[in-house]
Every structure is written in C-alpha cells, then in structure tokens.
Image (cartoon, rainbow, N blue to C red; front, top):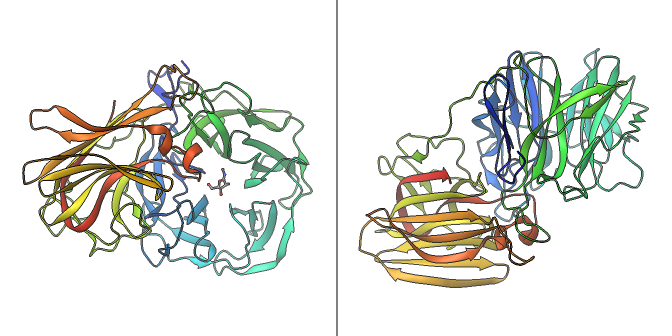
Length: 507
Ligand code: 6LW
C-alpha cells in the first residue's frame, strides 16, 4: 500500500515494514555497518545536542542511542545562528576499530571530525579541518590507508584524519551531470573492482535525485552512469518526494540498499511537508556493475534478512532520570542553569532567557513531530513563571499554548505577524496543555493545507477543550523555508516553569 502515512507491508518473515524508517526531521542520513550492527547519523542544524545517532540490526527498526555532539566543547551554535544554520550533513564510518564522523558546522568553524569507540558516546572533541572547504564532507580510506575527503561541489582533498592536516588544495572531480544543479552529498566506496562515487543532484527540493559515477581509483577519472539519475521522484505522483542524499550499505543478507532523505507533502497544491526531510530505505540491485535502485516501497526484506524490532520510545516521559533522553533537543545550547530535571525531582524545570519563541535564546526542550497525525500534552506548573507547549518550525513560524497563573493563551506567529488567537482562565495550580495535529484526507480546494493544528487544555475528565484551531500549512517547509521540520516541545517565557511529564502519541 502506498499512502501518505508512509508505506507499509508485511514481509515474508512476518514483520510489518514501514518507510520512512526514521520518521520526522532526520535528513542527510549516513549509515555504516559493523558486523551485525548498523549505525546511522543525521543533520541537526540549530538544535543542541547535535547529530542524532541510531542503532539497528535490520536497517528497518532504528533506536536512537545518543547524539554525537552533546557538549559545548564539540558544538558551539552562537546565539545568532539562524534556524537551518549550524550542523549539516554528516558522514559516519567505521575504520581501524573506531567510529569516525565528519560534519560541517556552517555557523562555527566549518568542517570537523570526531571519533568514538562506542557510537553511543562519548565522542571526542573535534579535530578542525580548515583546509576542507564547503559542506557535505565524506571520508574514505583507500587500500594503502590514505584518507580522502570529498565535499559538495564535487571536490576532493587528501587529509590526515588524526590531525586535520590537508595535503594540497581540493581538486575538482567531474562526476556530476552537466547542467544539473547542486551536486552535493558525495559518498565514495570501494565495491568490487570499482570506486563508486554516489552524489545528490538537482537541489534538495522536488528536483532532488541520486546519481553515481565510478572509477578504478578513488581520485578518478570518474565515468558517469548512463542511467543517471539512478533515483529521483521528480515529476511523479509518488507520495514520497524530494528523494536524494543517499548512502549505500550492505544488508544483513548480503544484498545492497541505501538510506536516503525524502519528504511527504500533503494538502492541495503545491503540497506542503511539515515533518521535514525524513530517512527512507530503498533496495539496491546491480546491473553491469552499476547500482539500480528499487522501489522505496514496500521494503520487503527476504526471510534471510530477519527483522529485529527494537525498543520504542514510551508515550510518556516522566522526567524521572537525571539526564534527558537523547530525543530531546533545545535551541542552540542547553545550559544546566536553564534546563534541569534535578531542581524539582520528577519534573523538568526551565528557567526563561528569551521572552518567547520569536527569540533565538528562548529556553526550549522539544522532540521531532514524527507522525502526520499525532497528539502531545504536558502538565505545566506556572506558579513561578510563564511557559507552554509549542509546535515549532523556526522563530518566525510557530503555534503555542502558554500558561501563566490562572490563565492560558494561544499564540500564532506566521512570518512577521504574531497574534493572540484565544485566551481563557484556568484554576490556579498545574494545568495540562495539549496539541492535536490532524492530517487532512480530503481537499475541497487546491489551496487546502496538509493538516490542522489544534491547541487547548486537557481537562481533568479527559476532554480536550480547543482554544485555537490553525491551518498547519504555515508551519511547513514550503512556507517557512529551510532544511528542518516541526518540533513539538516545552518552553519558558518568564521566570521558571516546571513540567511534570510530556506525552507524545501517533494518532
Ligand atoms: C545538505 C545538502 C542537502 O548539506 O541539504 O539534501 C543540505 N541535501 O546535502 C542541508 O541538509
């Protein structure tokens, strides 16, 4: 079945397989295999901690095990870092008993490299790469141990990954389709007799695609695949669009596949996607020494490729642990004096800095919206301040319900305009705030948006009192621009606010 909810089917081993394999804003996936284990990392932009890392045994079920850049010494996102600035496009590899991750911080110092023996962390402090220009760095070692770094453009330079030293200026590699825009996301591999250079082309919007070239050496000259692009959904009515930025990996049964990014636009025309660019899995076959990409859906591993569903995130986080789970992300930094689960046992305490989600330094803790329809709720105690529950795309695009002692208010910020949508009084003490996101299935008008975002109060009797019902189109990438997707979370606007729990559930 193909549908906007993703694609699902039952495989011969009896499991249900869905695409996207990592839903929500998880773009630019890079994957590596170590024995029976797979690890995958994604871009994280203005959020801290940065670069989520996932583990899987089957490439289908992924569990987040940490974040690569989780200390200020590794990740500095100055307060003027714009949304969609910060961390772009990692490459994750395993070599000589360690994990290597190379990535770009476009807002502080450019390319950097970190290593770890356990991908869950800790990761090293960064080795800076001042001689590696641009974005989308790839890392590969050839047979004699020489390390090559290839970047968007497409350009290549030899590096010493232990020191960050580069040898000579980057050299242009002619591997992209003449005339195609934005050759980027290179990944270079030795497979059989060839070195394959996988790239993305056409831009990360509807024209996105994956192309490949090959050579007998890692440095070229590269011969372009006559069938390029080997994957694109441009000008098709596929429910998954913008497919590109892929990384190849060998499946448990020895076959090949790729992880890639794609989006699920909804609503009328031009189609709005709200979850950002998500991680998908596609099968890859080989013909005449070239990779051939199969349909993204259904992903149907053979019985020789058994499925290993991992633990799922529980619906509720009670904030009972001394550290936040890795799925929680903040804006630009997360100083302990502004965000703590130790101040009041079993509660998340947020102390305000910026006065609203319009401000770059707002204190915010959220998680990615991962489902087209979902609900989220939280219990807030606003006795010492003001704060709330928000659906955020960036500083200029967010909806929130905010609680102060005795009152709740719904606000909407769309572009330069901020408005109060509704307000009502509530009894003093903790109050339960809720958000419902409902995907639209029918379009009476080509301008119909992809979903409705309702914000309100969760009543003690279980009822949900809606205070604001807003068109979700304004919290989409097509309206807001940029590379991220929606994040739903808690924030402080004044004083200190405490959150007892946070629930998130697909509906
Ligand atoms: C990334 C580039 C891209 O660096 O978008 O889709 C940029 N591809 O490769 C940001 O994610």
